[in-house]
Length: 349
Image 1: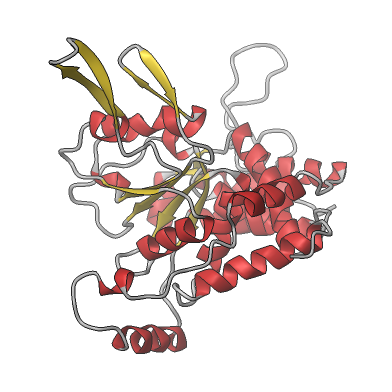
Image 2: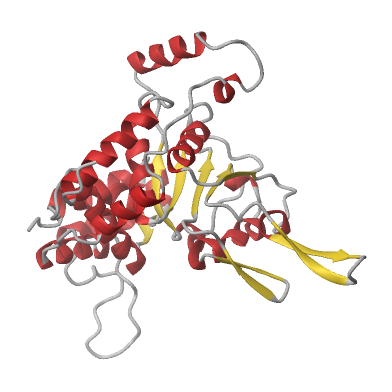
């Protein structure tokens, strides 16, 4: 690898893309999102119908980083202790000992996270936000790096539980896993046809992936991302984008307050969209957009951020942080449509 800053980082990312491409056909948007969140040290929410290689991609990501991988299958009867761990009575010593749960790993696949009730989903909140787990009266640090990749099925609602907004906000990005193109699907069929029959053949018989993003390489990428320059005008631009997702808040009564329901200052033409938004993104979204824009620039081999980097990162960063209204559902609008409209309205520096 060429170690000359951004150029060397782009070279390393290209190697990682190529290595993941040996296991996952197509899905370039998902692969780039996984790598971006890995470098940023943030958690990922993957949404897509079954059979689109979500689990395969997560396992491949763990393999190219040589990190410890654990999978948790979320079900309605799962308990919080099944994730974090619990205290177990040791008859020999006459004391309680800690039995650590599967969350104590570097890469966690929370498969079908919306199949478990909120109490179980919230067991991940402390782990995702603070990198630690409380069991009994003790607090135990999680391995570093620690990355949660949660999957959910968007078309199945029976027996599922919506993720609380507080937990959604802990995910750095939300990636939409889309259907492959016809050419990509032909490659998928042809590659699978060459595998021998048998259970689990897709994981046991494929060639091993090289750990191109091992500890040292990942550390170099993270260090390089911190050197990417952001002009103050770009920072102001991305903050304006996030602010434009927030509907007007009904003010408290008092002199000089605007009328209830009036657009917030600076929103201008975007105010027509607010009937589709129940709640906008928090400042945590601005922080996430700042981080992701810098890493997006790094992926392109640049050591400075452009408005295009911000626009590219806006969809995965904001789509799960905007709470849509009932009117949006009635009119068939989703968060991506609203984000696209906001990007067209907020002036570019």
